[in-house]
Amino acid sequence: MTTEKELLGLLGPLSEWLLSSSFEGTMRCEAIVREVAAAYGHTVEATFLADAALVTVGDRTLSFAREPGVPPLHQVSTIKGLLREISEADLSAPDAAARLAAIRREPGRWSRPWRVLGLVAFTVGFGISVQATWQQVGVSALTGLLIGLLVVAGNRHRRLVLIEPFLASLLVTTVVLTIYEHGLIDGGPIQLIVPALFYFIPGDAISAAALELAVNRMTAGAARLVYSTVVLLVLAFGALMATVLLQVPQSRLFDTTVPGNLGPAGVWGGWVLFAAGVMLTFSMAPRDFPWALGLVLLTAAVVEAGTRALGDPAGTFLGAVVMMATALLLGRRPGMPPAYVLYLGAFYVLTPGSHGLRGLESWIGGDPIQGVTGLADMVSLLVAIAVGMLVGAASVGRFIRPG
Image (cartoon, rainbow, N blue to C red; front, side, top):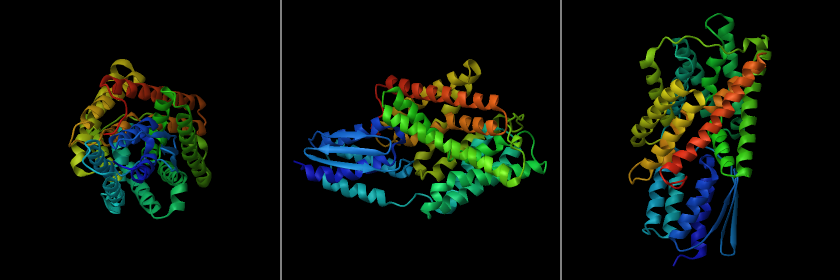
């Protein structure tokens, strides 16, 4: 029989890891902790908020406070196998705790140069979905390289990480506005600025907030929503400071549509490049990539078809339903990547945060009508994503649980 002390030796590190990667939602974290405890014959009380958690076994309680983020995806895949072994009663609690500690010590799957390349691919791939032009490819490659170097440098300097969103926005906006001032680009700069900042846009946090609010997790949902709003404001402020630094009118920040010249093959190739960028940026194992790429393309296709037929919110809703249902159905199967690994890239395809940033930057540029429209689009899309994820999970008879 597993003792309470042995169980806490496992649940403590597990809860800490779940909390630091809780943008999937607090419900999933609590479900995993309770199921692991049940596998060892114990009942546990687990309460997760956005950045804090309490876990009680018997008369002992552990508390944690961690900053949520995206975990290395290869660790998520390995921990799925560990949780399955625990559920099948094939592993003692001390052995499971030792395995978990070893998994958490694993280095990133990709070296720093590969991560820089990943952020370039991430930026260019998403940029093509914003503006399918060769100028977007060129500018996104340049700004993506700058962001990649900044992010990799920030991994080694904690103080730099804290101001990365502001520095990134200031740097990218300065570069794009400088190119614009020399007459080297067509259309407005905003569509060329946003792709490079997409790594920092908290689309996952915004959508998790909407999901948690939809299921009455008011504290966690409100906290994530406030955090997401602050990040968007910081990114917008960086763009504002760039106009001050360059001494150009704020009206230079405007958002206009430029006709695409890449064709359908270029657009779909952009999503392939984006998926490769997700793999390299977030430390995905190569064996999981084909499945993640498939879900990115499926989600993009559903969103495109739904948007053309029914409009943007309806297309996003259908994309979220298909994304969540497919990820959960595949993720529950042994040997398949976990649902989170499958849908992280597809989740970015839905992009509610980019609308918010484009709206804020349009507002700074002196176009409050377009700014309000962008923010309203963000609100409608995040609701569509939250409801779509709920419907998708309910349609396969399973809410957000391990795997």
